[in-house]
Amino acid sequence: TIDAPLLKNEKDKFVRVDKNGLSAITNYKKIISNDRFSLLNVEILTGRTHQIRVHMAHINHHLVNDDKYGNFAINKEFTSNYKYKYQFLHSYKITLSNIF
Image (cartoon, rainbow, N blue to C red; front, side, top):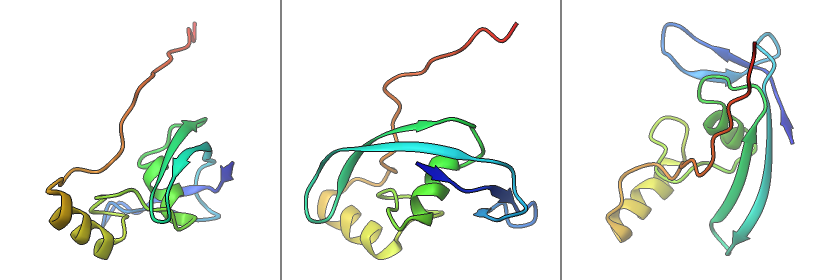
């Protein structure tokens, strides 16, 4: 579990972990990995802007091909070797709760 508040800078549009930010909680579980990459099951409990991307970067597990918060050297290498230019962040399940 990553429990780190997030604050959005309106000037540069970057979201950062900051003690003055809004509460943000992310659960994650490793499904499979090798010596360089991991496939994760991620659950966001608060739904902040860029929450998954910022939280994973915060613990030094950047999303592949994330051009805003990612590891740019790995992104370049991955794009060059595999010709894939989009970030590896995909939803397989969305649950909406009845809030009324």
